[in-house]
Image 1 (cartoon, rainbow, N blue to C red):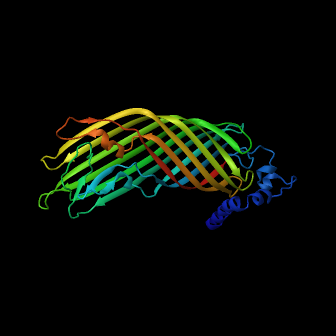
Image 2 (cartoon, helix red, strand yellow):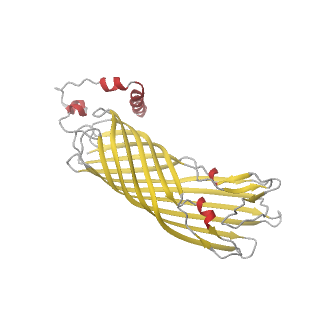
Image 3 (cartoon, rainbow, N blue to C red):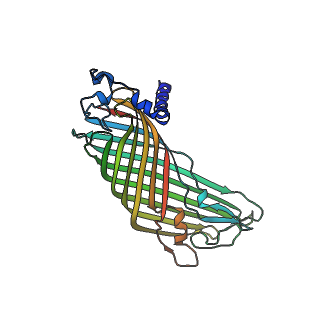
Amino acid sequence: MFTTLIRRLSWCSLSLALFPSFAEDSLVLDPAVDCQQTGFAESCSMPCHVLDPLGMDPVWSGRVDALLVWRSSPQSLPLFESVPGASVLNTADFGSGMAAGSRFSIFRHTGDQGAVEFTFLRVQSFVASESLPPTQGGYVQAEHGIYCCPSETPLNTIGSGLSSSLQSFELNRRFPTTGRWQWLTGFRWVQWHEDLTLRTEYGPPQMTFQNDYQTTVWNDLYGWQLGADSVLWGQGEPCRIEGIGKAGVYGNTATQRSIATNTAVQPPATLTVATNTSSLAFVGEVGLTAIYDITDRISVRAGYTALWLEGLATAPNQLDHQDLCFSDPIRGATDTGGGAWVQGITLGLEARY
């Protein structure tokens, strides 16, 4: 059963790519045939649109999608160098592997070919790590240092990690339309969280010391978005391609907390600085989905989704904006000049009632 559905979804995409004209003309509908028997929207007496592809005029509909996504690497910032002076660790090296997430959508149809939409998305979490083993000559910090505190102390080993997570809630009004397009607008909240850790070891084998650095950031974005959902191909057919795009300007309440710990003294010395700021941010989203109707009320979905966030406080970007030197006054600031690109595949179900 599952193999058959996958083959049919693949046929949808292949038909669109190779035989677009044949795909549109291959169905010749008899006007006398009742639409409940054919299931094709073009023979239905009710207007058909994105959320009601078969003209059934449902009261509720819902979608459940599994997300398999990747995030872009952070902006480049050299962290450590080999003793000859070559860069050996950069924040751009923290490219994460695949992360799994979920997305739930509920639509309350308003009876006028429009709807009210509730959507929640969560991805937890993107993880990346890098480590540098002992080597002849060791390592040193890059010229700018960590937390604006340069050091030429040779380092034996370096460990690092970056974790990120994303969640979002939307409340949209989809405007009454007929045909292939449906306009939407509404409130959206997006949260982006990151945690960066660095650990260095130095000293002779019989007396090794550690320096630990940790930066955590939270971004809460609140704003209004505009967009459109559409049937790009196959309206009224059991196999179709849908596309969606939406974007908005947001207010970002960003917070960062940075901690530096040195075990060369006893008890270990710790310096901490926490700051926050408010700024503007941007969020854009696009998606392309192939749908196959198992029945009049249940469909399977498979597609691609991408989310672009700009104006974020990312953890690596905070390293150059904190002053955590034991010989200087503690100072800090929250930098919101970062961004992230999240993209991947979606697999799900849709039901109409």
